[in-house]
Length: 163
Image 1: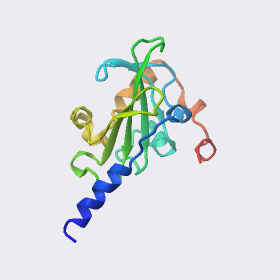
Image 2: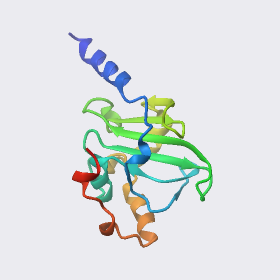
Image 3: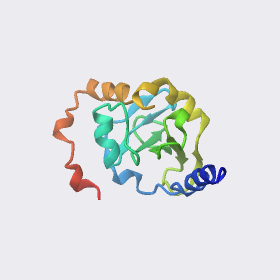
């Protein structure tokens, strides 16, 4: 019984998504690309239903199942999409020391995952915003606000836009 619980966590992490082909079908949080020094790229942010309001409201805790997709572009004109990085809020105990976040890096189509799980270079950066559930939502929302984008005009009816 002592080994059953850790083994269950291991099995669930192996079952985590291996395919993110529909990342661009989610809510596009950013109106334009924003510069991300941490990723050394220009990024957009797409969020699933569970992450959208938590992100916009700069929640201190994201719900289990919240997913954030960040396509990384080499250029501001979005001509070259290099990869997509993903964060998914997992169940309590997945990685308690690091906010229970699962990370993944995929090719631009989202059908080939290069890395997944407890990716140390992702964790080391996101630890900087531990108090915001490891999310840079405050600084990202400030960048978005700086381009005078009014969210109240574009936030979809979340009940309709995603099943």
